[in-house]
Length: 372
Ligand code: ATP
Ligand code: MG
Image: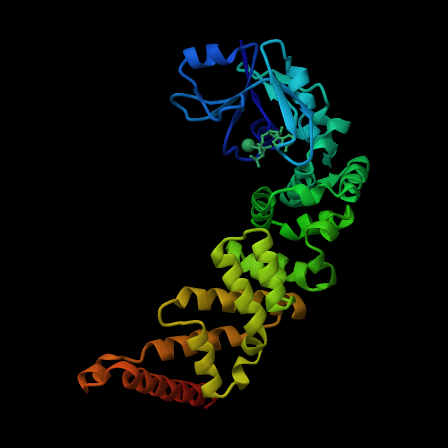
């Protein structure tokens, strides 16, 4: 049997980028041989194993054939007579279809190294069209390697357009799509992901809501430049949509709760954040109550960040004094101590009401100090 390093590890080493996880390919072995060597099988019908000590993934060389719609519609053929070239040709991009053996020899039958040098994301073979997820993968790699000058090859973009037109993108499960979207959002230039999807008509199929959202990508770009976390990026992307639409989109992709929640709150309250300096203290209090800033201060902070990213995207690098102002207001309201009210014998609704009253006083004082 022969073991090769494949995929991202080979690509990223050639690019001089850090390699996080290594995928291994085993040619010339049977399932039984792998098990006898102590490798643990990952799934019942998937020829992938986990190394007993390193925990890394070892896949048996395989060919695959499309046998129906969607991801389930694949039959795999893994056997000791599948060659390295046969395994590599079913991969998505030429830069992902290189292998390296343990003495460092590069196997590159589809000219991935040349495409790396030419900064091209190019599909390996027409079989690319058999898995619509590859459209999202290519867009994600475009977002990741945009800072290095990578582009999608024209012929690959054309093939991606055909996939979009075929209606196959709709067959992707929410889980598979979200995994790509989530990873794309965390790339250094996540807006490129959506630009590529738009260029191949996949945006219309996957996220048509964004088609008439002119500032979405600029806000997302700002959020990435400022290293914002996933849920802030998601909120920036969707912020021009109606809250009901934000909810529907988030649910369609089964986005995690914190992403959905923040995006809806930004959709609902962004204009209040922009007008923060003019809000009367009663409206300020209402905003803080809505966010439950007393128990969930971080969420309010993330909200402010998302609004700030959006404002920067629309006004260039102008200052956004609303951010510090609202952070200060939150701190003032949070500083109100409940103890004296409890000691005065207040309970239940009466306690709630007077706590609210004290917070309003604190905000009024904060506001006049800020204006003074
Ligand atoms: P990353 O740095 O994101 O891990 P990667 O290229 O290693 O990038 P993986 O998802 O770990 O990506 O997959 C490993 C390899 O398996 C890829 O390089 C590619 O050759 C192949 N591959 C993975 N998913 C697909 C797919 N949907 N279609 C074709 N080939 C794929
Ligand atoms: Mg990998």
